[in-house]
Every structure is written in C-alpha cells, then in structure tokens.
Image (tube, rainbow, N blue to C red; front, side, top):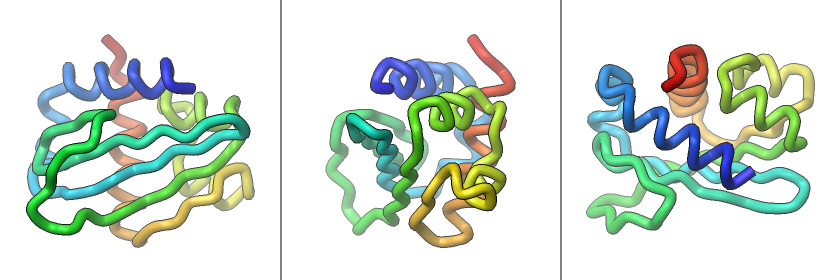
Length: 113
C-alpha cells in the first residue's frame, strides 16, 4: 500500500492545477488497510508523506478499507462516498474534508503521469 500512496503523492505533485484545491488546507490524511497505515500531510499546498511542522492544528481524516478498495480509491476508479455507502470504506472526518478528498482522489486518479 505504501507504494500506491507514494505513487499517488508523486502524481498529485505533478498535477499543479489540483493544488488550487489545497492552497488553504491543513490536513493529515491517514489511510489504513489490513496490514499497515500511512499518512499524507497537506499544508497550504505542500504534500508529503513525512510529518510537516504546521503552525495551526490540522484537520484529520482517516480512511480504512481493504487493500483492493484502497487501490481503487487511489486510482480514481472508486469515489470516496461510494465506498463509504457500500461499507467498503470507513471514513472519519468532516463532510467538507471528505468532499475535498473525493475530488482530489478522482482528479489525480483520472489524470495519470
């Protein structure tokens, strides 16, 4: 899973137009499957898998699911809300952040390197 998330972050960094959605966002996204947990740190348009010092407390979102479902989410084949409705994903976070992340997953996944 870590490789998939690294590829997702690299793809996101390549798509500068998507950063317009993240310019004012402070967020820690944790993605968990059956075996591991990875975090993505977003701070005013900067994205990293390593912790970033943030001046303000970031919002937190946690996504849990099977590896196959996480893979579909990261490549844009599955919408975040759709996975949650089907009980394939458990998502904890504000509705606003869920919608933001759904947009980012979809846009990054549909426009690959």
